[in-house]
Structure formats: structure tokens, C-alpha cells
Amino acid sequence: MAAIDSFNFYLPTRIVFGCGTVERIGTLSRSLGKRALIVTGRQSTKKSGLLERVMDLLRRSGITSVVFDDIVPNPLSTSIDEGARVLLENDCDFVIGLGGGSPIDSAKLIALVASDGGNCWDYTESGAARKPESAFPVVAVPTTHGTGTEADPFAVVTNPETKEKIGVGFDEIFPAISIVDPETMLTLSPEQTAATGMDAFYHAIESYLNSNHQPTSDLLALEAIGLINNYLPIAYEHPKDLEARTALAWASTAAGICETLSGCIANHSLEHPVSAYYNATHGAGLCATGPSLLEYIRPHVMERLGEVARVMGAPSREINIDELSRMAITLLRRLQKSVSLDITLSDLGVEPSMLPTLAEDAMRTMGGLVTVTPGNLQTIDLLKIYRMSI
Ligand SMILES: [Fe+2]
Image (cartoon, rainbow, N blue to C red):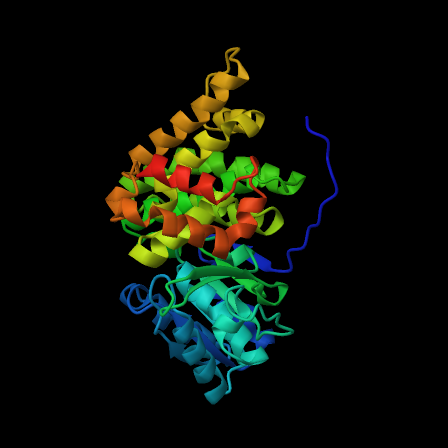
């Protein structure tokens, strides 16, 4: 067992997990105020009836609400600025992020910009790298099992002018309360199931391989990897399987905690320019480059990949660590194939001529995650990994 080093554990979010827990949104939110801004996407929570249900539950607890639904996948900094204006104009006390990662990340950023001022982009490394001092309280209600945003202080935003997609992280935007109800995830399509489930998988494995990994995230990462490996193919085939949805909902939240405690590595750096330029689905982008990254850094993480292989069902017979670490990558490719995500960058529309630009962008906008990747990767290494993935 590796020596345990010093670490930092801070997770101030009340996580309420379980089937039917969304019913408690009114009573849970009462302490946060009398008027909520609900941030949600343009379609799915309306179609499923969840938005109407949440508004009704709030009303019964004496909370009125205003809906802001100008949120697209890969949310735009300009929508955040507009949402902050709507919050202030309507005198809201707190923000509810209802839906997938995009509405919840947007809710966090709206809560921050409305409270602290300025424009959303000011808070990014590519903007003014402004540090906030406050934010309105946020309630997160995830309806996908992928981003882990319900258990982390991060939000991702895209600048529509420069095409930069950047993650920010501030303690002020940890959700005050997260309600994780697997029943709200039963309406996900097989494609959304696969993409969000693999996003959670990469949060877990990247945190596990991070140079800054720590004991709690190690436990949760292996738990999440094992659950996703077992249950994602089931939910992909049978979207209404509540046992599978519950396992994946917990895996996603567990992987979100891993992101908070240890954080992702270079696969998330590689993915961001791909979805920023090509509007690719985040989880699909991660699958295009993930196996190549693992192959590239395998000599530096063999022991840990060996543990990954074991929780993914590698045979228990004596097997050397070199073989076992290779097996982790084979099992990952098998998992991706089982949910139709054994894909290349070309499948996502990426042109070979763009790879140098993407590598430079990945390093410039998300270099922090590259630094914590074992193997001391430089921009040229990111380019080689892109080339292996096209
Ligand atoms: Fe992610």
C-alpha cells in the first residue's frame, strides 16, 4: 500500500440521495429564502414534467420561483450574464440548477456573478482571473449521472467569441444542497446515458491517477469505476432499470467528490477544445482521447491501472503488473464499445490540421490539469495523444 501523504478534505454540500428525494425540495430549500431562480435547459425538464413538479413543490413550501431556461449544452458566458441580470431583477434569494451539467454549472455561475458583480468571463483564467468573495446559495438537482457537479465547486463555461471552454473552481459555488434522485434519470436516452456515464467514469479514473490523489477519493474512485463498468451497459440497454440508474447516480456523485478532493487530469484538458470547437458531447470527447492518454502515461501509473483492472473484473490469477495495466485499457475500450463510444476524434469531426491548435488551447486553458498528470506532459505530448486518437 502506498504511503499516505498530507491532504485536504473540504466538502460543504448537504447531499440528499435516493429515489423520491426530489419531493423534499421545498422543505429542504426553505432555509435559503422565499424566491428561487430555477435555471434549466430548454426542453427536457419541461417534457418530463419535472420543472412543473418542482415549481409546485416549492409553492407548497411558500417559495415562489422564476424560470431562466436560456441554457444550451456547453453553456455560454453571455447566457450566464443574462441569468444574473434576471436573478437581480426578480429579487431572488437563491438559485436552483435543474437538469444536466449545463444548467447546474450555469446556476452556480449565475449565483456568483449576481452576487459578486462583473461579467462571467472575468472569473476565468483567460479573462481577469477574478476571485469571488460571495455567491447566492445554490440547490443542485441533477437529472443525469455524469458531471458530478452536485458534489464539486466547479463550473465550465464557453466564450462564444473566442471558442474557449474553461473550467473554474471556487469554494463559494459548492451547492448548499444537492438532491440526487435516480428516478429523475429514467428518461435519459441511451446516448445521454452512455455519454454522461462515461464522463463520470473519467472523473473517477482521472482522480485516481492524479498525482494529488488522496485516500477518500481513492476509495470512491474505485467504487465508481466498478459500478459504472457493471451498470452502464445495463442502463444503456434498459433505460428504465432503476437499480442500474441508482448505481450510476451514486457513482456519478462519488466521482464528483473525487473531482473535488483530487481532481481530473489531462483527459479533461484534451477534451475541452474538442467540444469548444466542434460542439462535441463532453462524454464522447473524453472517450475519443481517454484510452490514448492512458496508453501514453501507462509507464508512470502501472500500479494504479492494475487496481483499475481488478475492479473492472480482471482475472484474479497471478498476472504481472505490466499485463494488468494493459488489461485496464483493454477493459476500458470494451466498456466504451458496449455503449457505442469506441470512437475517434475523426468521428467527432476533428480535422488533423486542427490538432496543433487544439493542443495549444488545451495547455493554455486547462494546463493546471496537465501539471498534475503523471509523466510531466508538455504541449508536444498533448499533440501526440491527439494524433493517437484521430
Ligand atoms: Fe467531465
